[in-house]
Image (cartoon, rainbow, N blue to C red; front, top):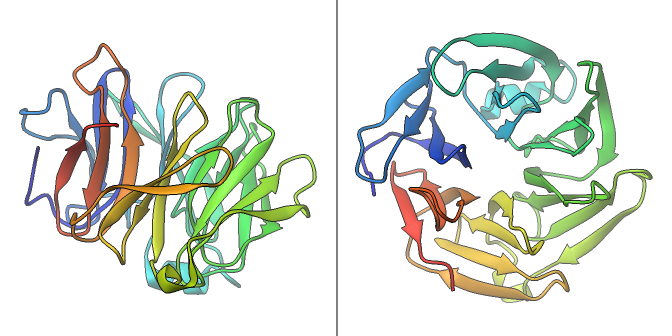
Length: 260
């Protein structure tokens, strides 16, 4: 769909439009149609990271998503979250003191979770903005999603043996392996994560240049190959301009993937 957009970190479809972050441009960008020019929604953002949708329809945008911030975030957290009007009407600071804000996911009750792929734990943000550091132990967590029931948080791991961990939100000490590829694919460098209405997961596999679908029973299927360092994936909305699956890459591409 688009190319040459810089180093892209995250992507989401919201309100019939596609939003993605460019670390090169230090911006959150919007596509109103697949063939449209990207529109800046938020600019001069320090290391823009993960994306989620707030309860009032604004976007939750992570900042401080850089290796330097992530490494420092283990003992001196300086990343955080912004609230962004998707129409370009303004940016409001919301949360500071997170490890990295690489992956961002919002639960149905308004709780937000943030990851640090250079860290050892996940952070939790209560609906009122209170930060709980080191809420759950998941090493090198990157992409995050919460299931529709708000029962489990899923985290893709990057700089460790490739796996998707499942955290029971009510008991964050209960962390299990939801899916793990064979040992031959152990160094796949899993990145962004998305979930569809059937509770299937989609993960950007940076090292392999692929997107995998992970069924609720943990079975893995590669549904796209040869993408060139995909960093994140988003599930589209049927009946809108963006009905398919979408991926962004570190090479600056925004790609549509026909869902099987």
